[in-house]
Image (cartoon, rainbow, N blue to C red; front, side):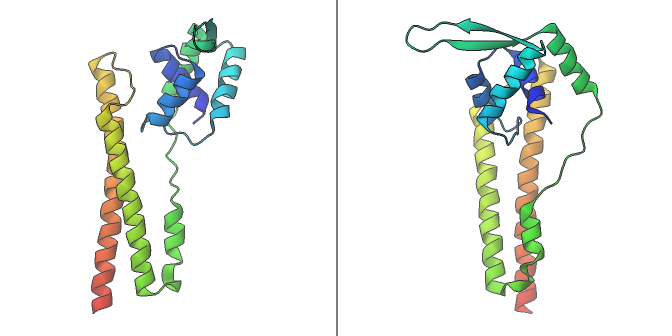
Length: 181
């Protein structure tokens, strides 16, 4: 997914500065994106050049002026085209599984420690995402259907970490049984 569509979606909800967009994306469990902050500003410039967003300067007394971006009608049309387009199949990338595939080189104790560390990382991430959701992520709540959809997206994210946690715990238990036989 291009960051441009995430930006258009956010701007369809409300006008925002580049910094505000960065914070929403950063704080949201639903707006996953792994790029750097410069890419947000580059995307805004490109969207502006394509006429998909507009901006206006907001002057502030005690701070530098800031640009507030809003979506244009053409931007709304492009966003809708993307939303109704063929969904992308999710990419499954889990570097830990590649690491685990070669764990035959480890002693039982080393493998146990590796799995415990992974379990701890997943548990921490699960708690972190639960806390983000509990704090009330920045999300549009324009109507009951939109609220329901965003809640289901958060539920999907949490279920991934819950499933991964159950999987690694089950694997550790099975390995412990095998090692004790």
